[in-house]
Length: 221
Image 1 (cartoon, rainbow, N blue to C red):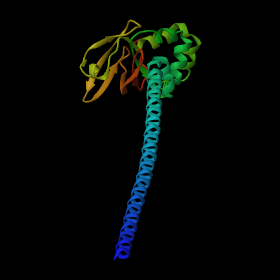
Image 2 (cartoon, helix red, strand yellow; image 1 turned 180 degrees about the vertical axis):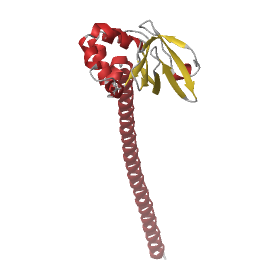
Image 3 (tube, rainbow, N blue to C red; image 1 turned 180 degrees about the horizontal axis):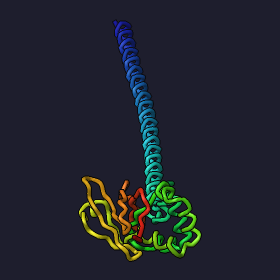
């Protein structure tokens, strides 16, 4: 009887030992899994933070570059006076040469503002043969008179000109021409009675505005 009891007690004790060992093993396994999860989460969080920082730096650099480009473009535009604007257009080469020959470059680079009715190269080429050469040969004479006849003090935009039908406009030369509105077309009638078409308008410069004309205006009858 005693031996059976002892055998039963030993079997029961062995079961308890195995049960406790199982619990301990399970606890260790769960703990290990928890550490792995924590490590993975931490690594993921670190990677995400690094990617966010990289994206932010890239966005900041792109924004800075765009702002710098915009500032440079604005600064360049603000520096283009009437002479620079005419030279950059590519269709007023003769006009720019004449302005420089007549000594008017400094004036037209001044504060102004000025409104210039600018003849194209084709307009100068349409002058009678030998006329342009004669004008350039005596730049302080008739050339200066003609050029200043194309300049008006102040900024006069196309919208303003369209309200000036029948009005006379005084030029820096001292003479006047008359504005006539024909539908949506603007025609300038000079002292000689020539009817000159305005073919393009509102070319803005830092010190004024340029309107394009297809004929050289004449300040003399």
